[in-house]
Amino acid sequence: MTNKGTTSNEATRVNIWAVTRLHNAMTIIEVDDAKILTDPWFVDSRAFVGHSPIGVDQLPRFTAIIGCHWVKDHWGMAEMEAYPHKDTPVFVSAPNMEQSARKVGFTDVEVLAWGAERKLTDTVTLHCLEEHIGRGRQTNNYGIVGPHARIFFGGEVCDLAAIGRVGEANEPFDVAIGPVNGVHLMGRQLTATAAQMLAATRLLHAPKLLPVHDEHKPFGPLLKIASSIRDLDTVEHSDVEIIELGLGERYEQAS
Image: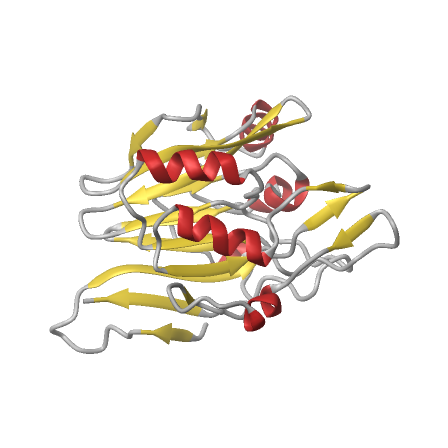
């Protein structure tokens, strides 16, 4: 996997946080001694551009696995059956996600309500943040907070009013990670466009935006892709750094 941003080759530098982009909303987020997998989906689908550059058999042991959204392309548990560390804590947004995780052998699975907090390590805390309710099921955003880093992750960001409330209730984040392709299903918007995610980043008072969820292919009138990261090329964002990662690339912020 390719490294971008600041490297940690110099002994005097200390890693603060890092993100590896894998596929759709699936990333690996590292904060201090915590290593977190988000929205696992190890599927090679013709409905998407590309696929994860690594397989389940190449995954490290994680501190936690988190799921934002209850649809298949955010929560591929069939493939995660091959992950050997089934005692890894798993935090999800909806009961069907808990059920599918337990079905493949995960033993420590919890549906988190907005406002919940869980200690991941002695120094890193997971905060469950408001997003939206769709078809009766909750979608979560998350804050991953260490002593020197505050990471916002939203795999299915759509409700900017909710983001605004999160921004008002929390200290500024160091980076916002979220979708940019503005997927519409049968005319209903599911995720933020690039411009909306940039607005969300500002509401969170984050100086950096790391786009994900940008690989869907359109499917006739059923599935419309309204946006992409390229939309940000023509939008003024001198106040926000865009961290553009290809699949498999890693960004590391160090001090």
